[in-house]
Amino acid sequence: MSARFQVSGVPAFNDNYIWVLHDGRHAAVVDPGEGFPVQRFLKENGLALAAILITHHHGDHVGGVEELLQAQSRPVPVYGPRSEAIAGVTRPVGEPATVALPELDATFRILDVPGHTAGHIAYFGHGALFCGDTLFACGCGRLFEGTPDQMAASLDKLAALPENTAVYCAHEYTLSNIAFAKAVEPDNLQLRERAADAAETRRRGLPTVPSTIGLELRTNPFLRCREPSVVRAVVSQTGTQPTDRVAVFAALRQWKNTF
Image (tube, rainbow, N blue to C red; front, side, top):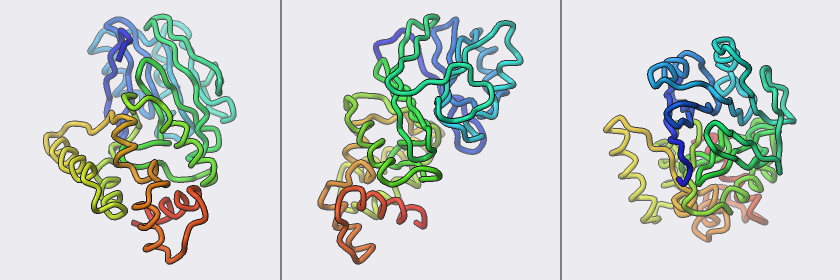
């Protein structure tokens, strides 16, 4: 990462990660579903909160916003998707806007990535992608509000980013996602390697994220809907021939929902 800031993951709930961008003095927080663990991290590291970045409206991503704001002695900008009503958001944004964080000498491009929710956004910059619940390590989010066509297009947009982009998703779902991916592509050697690495990482109590776009392209079935091996798996699972990549994606997502 070329920026001067670091990224730390603050665990929350059972499997959430709240990402904190910090440079030793200032911090920006991504999707604070809980306030207390973030407050503790800021205090322990002597950091002043400079901004809050929200990807979508679900409670495990926004539940701590009010608590964090109340603890501040001055106003803190809260960025969030312009098409979702989220309490506390003061800077609604959407593609092709950018978000400048002068305290961290950082600027992020906004990407509209609907599917998990209707107005979901992601933040991309400095070799990092903060994608909420759209793209997961070896998986993708459920379609609560969007359509398969929307989610497939959103994933294509993220897949087109540079392969060395660090993918900071919001949940530790990697092992369960890999189990599904192996059911789809049991002969994918790079997926087998990823499975072994991820299992060892979790055994040591460490997070499996961030991932990279390149690793996702090689092992994440939801980014591989055009691959013959993935298409064959869908045909075997459904007994029908999908008409296009969106149909492949929709079948994969439905399969994963009941896996």
